[in-house]
Image 1 (cartoon, rainbow over the protein chains, first blue to last red):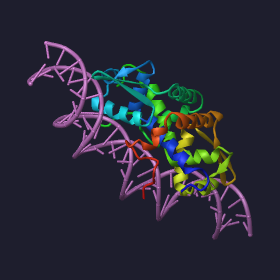
Image 2: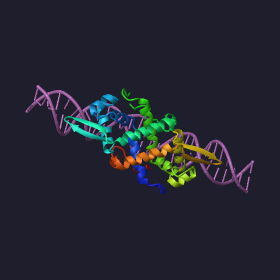
Image 3: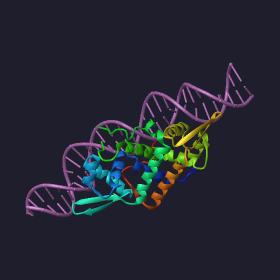
Image 4: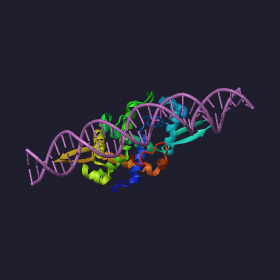
Length: 116
Length: 116
DNA sequence: AAATCATATCAGCATTGGATGATGTGTGCT
DNA sequence: AGCACACATCATCCAATGCTGATATGATTT
């Protein structure tokens, strides 16, 4: 499919970025930047529905971006590594200095509003 | 929508990551990491169709990730800033060390194959 | 001026992905 | 044991996104 540049690496990167490309998942990661949180806390912090949060957490966990620690009937989630935080930081820098036009990119509206 | 963490920043990040979350766009960016390329060159390098490439380039350009320099009937595209390359690099590090499970994340299949 | 080439734009289609409500699993308390 | 709570999973629905072929625009050459 891609003669020149290693498809595998690209596909992986694409998947990683897609994992980060969702406002809900970013909100969850944001909630975890300050420390471990239970699912219930994340629900409260983000305003998302519980099944929705669980679903996204499963995704983030599969991807290795967050870690889960069961404790009694609670499950504490945390960023799995400081690099995750770092990537978010680098992205913010890029937004501030380079990618200012992102808000105006009309190719997709994802992130502007939620569906029904 | 998100009481705790600045929604705006999150929406912006989501949009930026979504800009990077597409295998075609990543392939294009990859093709540009080695220098300026015309649309035709990118088409050849990536194997994508020309309208498709133009479309993605418009997206990337709107987002500020790439810059366009018309020269005669050609248009040369290039990464707009070294930070773009940097972000891709950080993402690769994350993939190598932390997010190894990304390949197995079954919440979405984006990046594994193209449609019809 | 006509033709050709490089790129951009358009309308339509198919697919993916995310949200929701209902339900299942397992733990802790009384 | 029975109940209540915290979280996970399921099936379904809907919207957004990306791809394609056709076409328009603009520039260069003859």
